[in-house]
View 1 (cartoon, rainbow, N blue to C red):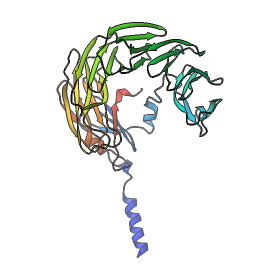
View 2 (cartoon, one colour; view 1 turned 180 degrees about the horizontal axis):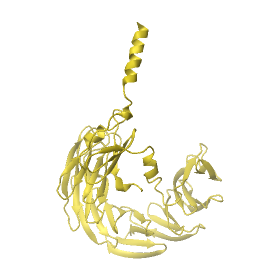
View 3 (cartoon, rainbow, N blue to C red; view 1 turned 90 degrees about the vertical axis):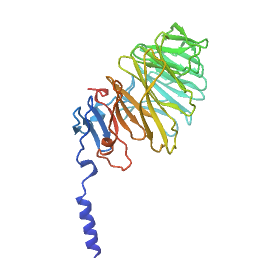
View 4 (cartoon, helix red, strand yellow; view 1 turned 30 degrees about the horizontal axis):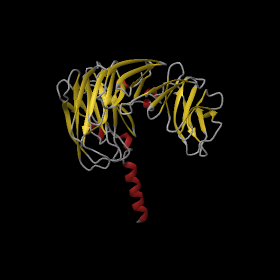
Length: 373
């Protein structure tokens, strides 16, 4: 009897198809190809709605990799005692001369260089051929980025230092903490607001000043094409690179927060963002996607939905393709928003019926054009 039951169970299990081999659903028509992926692999949704499997390892071959400007082929590890290691294809090519137990911080790769932070000691720099050197002593400093000629940008609570490859401090800049700073790797320009409230652009040691932004709140980020976005708790402001304001929106409801950044349209004339009353652990909340046009001070709602239970992370991703925005929320909601007609193509059901291994698994999606090649 026992053998019969076991045999029946084995036969039933064998007859169940592997979850990754289930037939693919058919999707809705979309304005441009979309790539979706789960634990079972990646899939391409064609404009006509046909879904097809992409080759194995497609994401690894077409993704952005580490996304680093320099040292994209290198990996950083730390040993248990606190030694930094740099690896190339799994082989150690550099190791720190000292140990940094419970004191290692962020790292930054430059042209044939590595900088890393020790919270209590400061910033160390190496050319990856010799031992590291302390080039910026102090607490709470961070290696932010490298310029094209190899100068290191070191940031602190109110001051930015520019450090040459030989370790000399070339210049210091003081910025207003409520606006932060942002570096454009394509132009080697560093943007920040001075304590006096003027927008400043630093290119190497040379600094130029833009418009006064005395009342502007929000952290500055570089945006294309040739824009800056100041992203605050209750406001969003877009400016030209000289500080000329081209769009702004504010909201007074303290329970609402902009939790997903700002996505700028390809032509720089529209800005999509989300407001929600969600927070980690929320059982029920709502989210609204807004569109802010250039020359406007009022944003209009283009999509609303109720959020499911929130885990540790709350937010969404917004990305443009022409006049359409691909909206992907952390609760699994997935939709394409047409900003000209105000209509939405719901992809949530399609995403949930894709082959996957775990019951509560969430599918991810991106425009095909966002991938390399």
